[in-house]
Image (cartoon, rainbow, N blue to C red; front, top):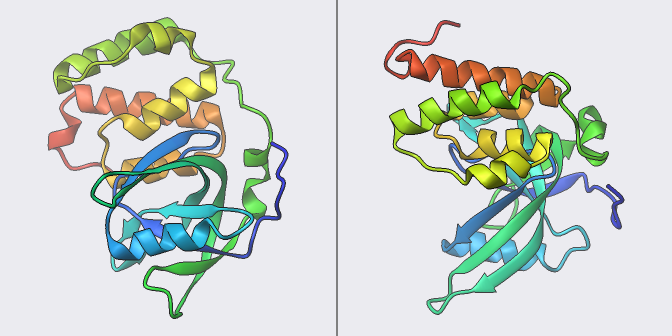
Length: 208
Protein backbone atom coordinates (compact mmCIF):
# COMPACT_ATOMS: atom_id res chain seq x y z
CA UNK A 1 0.00 0.00 0.00
CA UNK A 2 1.42 3.36 -1.05
CA UNK A 3 0.22 6.09 1.30
CA UNK A 4 -0.13 9.63 0.03
CA UNK A 5 -0.10 10.92 3.60
CA UNK A 6 1.90 10.38 6.78
CA UNK A 7 0.35 8.25 9.49
CA UNK A 8 -0.61 10.73 12.22
CA UNK A 9 0.27 10.34 15.89
CA UNK A 10 -3.25 11.32 16.87
CA UNK A 11 -6.56 10.10 15.42
CA UNK A 12 -10.27 10.21 16.31
CA UNK A 13 -11.70 7.01 17.76
CA UNK A 14 -15.01 5.30 17.10
CA UNK A 15 -15.60 2.75 19.89
CA UNK A 16 -18.10 0.13 18.78
CA UNK A 17 -18.61 -3.26 20.49
CA UNK A 18 -18.40 -6.23 18.15
CA UNK A 19 -17.18 -4.16 15.19
CA UNK A 20 -13.62 -4.71 13.99
CA UNK A 21 -11.85 -3.59 10.84
CA UNK A 22 -9.34 -6.08 9.43
CA UNK A 23 -6.27 -5.19 7.34
CA UNK A 24 -7.16 -4.21 3.75
CA UNK A 25 -10.87 -4.76 4.39
CA UNK A 26 -13.74 -2.28 4.18
CA UNK A 27 -16.33 -1.50 6.82
CA UNK A 28 -19.64 0.27 6.16
CA UNK A 29 -20.89 2.47 9.00
CA UNK A 30 -24.08 4.38 9.66
CA UNK A 31 -23.44 7.61 11.60
CA UNK A 32 -26.28 9.46 13.27
CA UNK A 33 -25.14 10.68 16.71
CA UNK A 34 -24.18 14.38 16.59
CA UNK A 35 -20.72 13.71 18.04
CA UNK A 36 -19.88 11.22 15.29
CA UNK A 37 -21.29 13.45 12.58
CA UNK A 38 -18.94 16.13 13.94
CA UNK A 39 -16.10 13.57 13.92
CA UNK A 40 -16.75 12.82 10.25
CA UNK A 41 -16.88 16.52 9.38
CA UNK A 42 -13.56 17.13 11.13
CA UNK A 43 -11.98 14.03 9.63
CA UNK A 44 -12.85 15.01 6.07
CA UNK A 45 -10.87 18.22 6.57
CA UNK A 46 -7.63 16.29 7.19
CA UNK A 47 -5.19 14.88 4.63
CA UNK A 48 -5.35 11.36 6.09
CA UNK A 49 -9.15 11.09 6.63
CA UNK A 50 -8.53 8.34 9.23
CA UNK A 51 -10.95 7.08 11.87
CA UNK A 52 -9.76 4.55 14.43
CA UNK A 53 -12.15 1.65 15.01
CA UNK A 54 -11.68 0.24 18.49
CA UNK A 55 -13.73 -1.93 20.85
CA UNK A 56 -14.70 -0.95 24.39
CA UNK A 57 -13.17 -3.25 27.00
CA UNK A 58 -14.26 -3.09 30.62
CA UNK A 59 -14.25 0.55 31.67
CA UNK A 60 -11.83 1.49 28.92
CA UNK A 61 -10.80 0.54 25.42
CA UNK A 62 -9.00 -2.39 23.82
CA UNK A 63 -5.24 -2.01 23.43
CA UNK A 64 -5.34 -2.53 19.67
CA UNK A 65 -7.62 -1.11 16.99
CA UNK A 66 -7.51 -0.54 13.26
CA UNK A 67 -7.69 2.77 11.44
CA UNK A 68 -9.66 3.16 8.25
CA UNK A 69 -9.65 5.96 5.71
CA UNK A 70 -13.01 7.41 4.73
CA UNK A 71 -13.26 6.26 1.11
CA UNK A 72 -16.95 6.95 0.50
CA UNK A 73 -19.76 8.82 2.19
CA UNK A 74 -23.33 9.82 1.43
CA UNK A 75 -26.05 11.66 3.29
CA UNK A 76 -29.51 10.22 3.83
CA UNK A 77 -32.68 12.24 3.69
CA UNK A 78 -32.83 12.65 7.46
CA UNK A 79 -29.27 13.98 7.83
CA UNK A 80 -27.60 10.69 8.71
CA UNK A 81 -24.38 9.64 7.02
CA UNK A 82 -23.43 6.34 5.43
CA UNK A 83 -19.66 5.96 5.18
CA UNK A 84 -17.19 3.29 4.13
CA UNK A 85 -13.82 2.88 5.81
CA UNK A 86 -10.94 1.29 3.93
CA UNK A 87 -8.48 -0.25 6.40
CA UNK A 88 -5.02 1.32 6.45
CA UNK A 89 -3.29 -0.16 9.50
CA UNK A 90 -3.83 -1.52 12.96
CA UNK A 91 -2.53 0.59 15.81
CA UNK A 92 -1.70 0.31 19.49
CA UNK A 93 -3.54 2.73 21.73
CA UNK A 94 -1.18 4.89 23.75
CA UNK A 95 -3.25 7.58 25.41
CA UNK A 96 -6.80 8.87 25.11
CA UNK A 97 -6.59 12.65 25.04
CA UNK A 98 -8.99 15.06 26.66
CA UNK A 99 -9.97 17.89 24.37
CA UNK A 100 -12.72 20.16 23.18
CA UNK A 101 -14.08 17.71 20.61
CA UNK A 102 -17.26 15.82 21.59
CA UNK A 103 -15.73 12.52 20.42
CA UNK A 104 -12.70 10.56 21.62
CA UNK A 105 -9.25 11.24 20.23
CA UNK A 106 -6.06 9.38 21.07
CA UNK A 107 -2.36 9.15 20.53
CA UNK A 108 -1.52 5.89 18.77
CA UNK A 109 1.54 3.87 17.76
CA UNK A 110 1.72 2.17 14.36
CA UNK A 111 5.17 0.60 14.64
CA UNK A 112 4.05 -2.96 15.48
CA UNK A 113 1.96 -3.29 12.31
CA UNK A 114 4.22 -2.38 9.40
CA UNK A 115 2.99 -5.53 7.60
CA UNK A 116 -0.48 -3.99 7.31
CA UNK A 117 0.91 -1.49 4.81
CA UNK A 118 2.12 -4.23 2.46
CA UNK A 119 0.23 -6.21 -0.13
CA UNK A 120 -2.41 -8.86 0.64
CA UNK A 121 -1.28 -11.84 2.71
CA UNK A 122 -1.57 -15.41 1.48
CA UNK A 123 -2.42 -18.45 3.58
CA UNK A 124 -0.64 -21.56 2.22
CA UNK A 125 -2.34 -23.76 4.82
CA UNK A 126 -5.89 -22.80 3.86
CA UNK A 127 -8.03 -25.85 2.96
CA UNK A 128 -11.01 -24.22 1.29
CA UNK A 129 -13.01 -27.41 0.94
CA UNK A 130 -12.73 -28.17 4.65
CA UNK A 131 -13.41 -24.55 5.62
CA UNK A 132 -16.50 -24.30 3.42
CA UNK A 133 -17.85 -27.58 4.76
CA UNK A 134 -17.40 -26.33 8.32
CA UNK A 135 -18.81 -22.93 7.45
CA UNK A 136 -21.89 -24.46 5.81
CA UNK A 137 -22.71 -26.38 8.99
CA UNK A 138 -22.19 -23.25 11.07
CA UNK A 139 -24.34 -21.10 8.79
CA UNK A 140 -27.18 -23.60 9.04
CA UNK A 141 -27.08 -23.69 12.84
CA UNK A 142 -27.01 -19.88 12.98
CA UNK A 143 -29.67 -19.50 10.25
CA UNK A 144 -27.29 -17.38 8.20
CA UNK A 145 -26.68 -17.28 4.46
CA UNK A 146 -23.74 -16.36 2.28
CA UNK A 147 -22.82 -15.94 -1.36
CA UNK A 148 -20.91 -19.17 -1.93
CA UNK A 149 -19.88 -18.25 -5.47
CA UNK A 150 -18.30 -15.01 -4.25
CA UNK A 151 -16.67 -16.83 -1.35
CA UNK A 152 -15.17 -19.41 -3.71
CA UNK A 153 -13.65 -16.69 -5.90
CA UNK A 154 -12.37 -14.50 -3.05
CA UNK A 155 -8.63 -14.27 -2.37
CA UNK A 156 -7.40 -15.89 0.85
CA UNK A 157 -7.14 -12.64 2.79
CA UNK A 158 -10.47 -11.23 1.68
CA UNK A 159 -12.23 -14.49 2.55
CA UNK A 160 -10.71 -14.91 6.01
CA UNK A 161 -10.91 -11.25 7.01
CA UNK A 162 -14.49 -10.89 5.77
CA UNK A 163 -15.60 -13.93 7.76
CA UNK A 164 -13.75 -12.65 10.83
CA UNK A 165 -15.59 -9.34 10.60
CA UNK A 166 -19.06 -10.62 9.72
CA UNK A 167 -19.64 -13.82 11.70
CA UNK A 168 -21.50 -13.28 15.00
CA UNK A 169 -18.70 -13.93 17.49
CA UNK A 170 -18.44 -12.13 20.82
CA UNK A 171 -16.38 -8.93 21.20
CA UNK A 172 -13.51 -10.79 22.88
CA UNK A 173 -13.27 -13.29 20.05
CA UNK A 174 -13.46 -10.49 17.47
CA UNK A 175 -10.60 -8.74 19.23
CA UNK A 176 -8.50 -11.90 19.24
CA UNK A 177 -9.08 -12.26 15.49
CA UNK A 178 -8.01 -8.66 14.94
CA UNK A 179 -4.84 -9.13 16.96
CA UNK A 180 -3.78 -12.33 15.16
CA UNK A 181 -0.21 -11.73 13.93
CA UNK A 182 -0.63 -13.41 10.54
CA UNK A 183 -3.41 -14.43 8.20
CA UNK A 184 -2.71 -18.10 8.94
CA UNK A 185 -3.03 -17.42 12.67
CA UNK A 186 -6.35 -15.66 12.06
CA UNK A 187 -7.64 -18.54 9.95
CA UNK A 188 -6.68 -21.09 12.60
CA UNK A 189 -8.46 -19.08 15.28
CA UNK A 190 -11.48 -18.57 13.03
CA UNK A 191 -11.77 -22.32 12.43
CA UNK A 192 -11.41 -22.96 16.16
CA UNK A 193 -14.20 -20.50 16.99
CA UNK A 194 -16.53 -22.05 14.42
CA UNK A 195 -15.80 -25.56 15.72
CA UNK A 196 -16.32 -24.38 19.29
CA UNK A 197 -19.72 -22.91 18.40
CA UNK A 198 -20.75 -26.09 16.57
CA UNK A 199 -19.97 -28.11 19.68
CA UNK A 200 -22.24 -25.92 21.80
CA UNK A 201 -19.46 -23.74 23.12
CA UNK A 202 -21.57 -20.64 22.82
CA UNK A 203 -23.53 -21.88 25.82
CA UNK A 204 -20.54 -22.89 27.88
CA UNK A 205 -17.89 -20.99 29.77
CA UNK A 206 -14.83 -20.42 27.61
CA UNK A 207 -11.65 -21.87 29.05
CA UNK A 208 -8.86 -19.30 29.41
